[in-house]
Length: 216
Length: 377
Ligand SMILES: C[S@@+](CC[C@H](N)C(=O)[O-])C[C@H]1O[C@@H](n2cnc3c(N)ncnc32)[C@H](O)[C@@H]1O
Image (cartoon, rainbow over all chains, first blue to last red; front, side, top):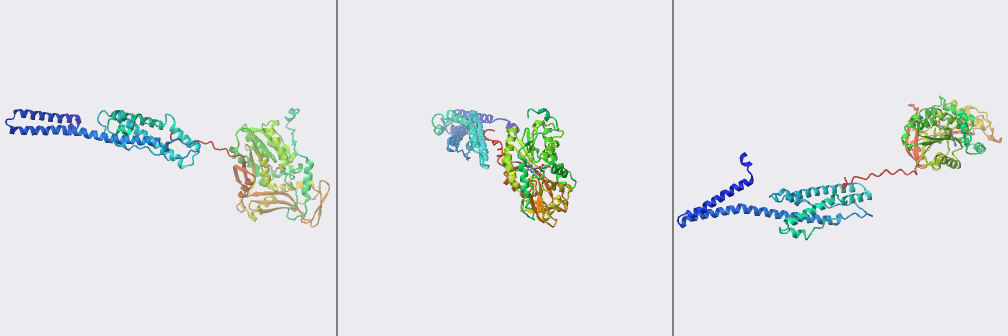
């Protein structure tokens, strides 16, 4: 086991395919040297079985992986659209400076991002940029949601004067602040999805045309 | 004043501002002694201030303060320094001017001025008293061994229980100190000597106290509030021969009465739930009518069993004291409470020293520290 576990997946794939191809070659040669039509059935049948094995193992695996990716992309784009709607929605409108009030903020969703990251759908080489960006996005959403928790606690547990409500709102919205950073990451993710995965069915359609709303 | 600065440097001289007509005062004493007969001690009277007015009274008071048989005053003076120090953190910062209302023998003023001097915070010293003799005595005692320049000492002779006098005193103080903070003091249970003590405190607070000023008030206190406690309180005054001399000294000055010390009685009463009231009364016990000749040579009948109230005093209950502060529109910013010479079989009498502030002095709003901001930190 110790020795076997040291070889990589690629090694086993190469070994399997080499064996199969070698067996297929053997079958082809067998057909040419076989005497009589009866005795040709056997190498032909074996050859076909081998072709089925080669295409079945490889192609089926690739197709399944592509399907998982497509599903993950659906979920990711859906989530992105939903979060954009939340950020642009009424609950995140700036406070009225004359009558600020304590509010309950909706939380940004991140379940699709989490699921994508653990599913390994983008584990194949070539998706590194997306995985890195998803990690940053996930952390930013988590951090932002926690700050929303604290803001609510602060404003609901005790009577907070109006200027403090305004100060919290202003700090949230300040250029270079948490909300700003979050919207930038969201735009980056949206751009990556559109450019790199836009041809996948449904992605471009979900994200809508052109640059997404950059948020406030 | 500017022409005699060198004279002021000589401690043999004192400059005293006399704030009212002294002849008017004499008329006031006479009026007090003209009241009709009342065997309960509420008729003829010598009101507070006049008990101390004049040289004889001043000397008698100084003696009483040192009498071993009259421990209340002695203890009050002896422990003042300690009690005052417990109060000093409630003072405003910077140099302080000190106005002593009724300085008496000046020993307490000495303790207070010494503290300010040692901290380099002394400003003007303005003792205010009805009695010129008392002022001179107080000033000498209070300033002993201190470095207060003579120009910063301004004794004022006037009766501080009269509103018009307070207006004039207020103007004088404002001229002398400007906007700088002043500590006023009314010590030695002097407030209790007035018939309407709450009204006097309210008047003083209203006329004198600005938001930056403080008022140091010392009053006698009692824990018990029954007849026995009232009797015990009266007893405290009866024992001291020097105190008897002091209370009768005014009678000696303003009447031609042949004074018999046995005719002196102290009566303890319960005054609602606010205080024990002690009346020191001189009663005609000769068995026949007498006649009093007053300073204006007029005569007043003094029938048998009639009384002259020589002194009024009180010991306040905690509740009574609180109520008085509320009614006088002052708030407490510091206090010490000393339970004095209490014996196991006697009610606990003590002394309360209070640091007061005008209730109109809006409490300084605590600087608002903005709370934590989750989107900043
Ligand atoms: C009981 S002694 C207190 C002396 C001193 N403060 C102490 O605690 O030892 C009262 C002082 O107040 C003065 N006094 C009493 N009534 C007064 C009045 N109406 N106006 C001015 N001074 C008065 C007396 O002359 C006397 O000096």
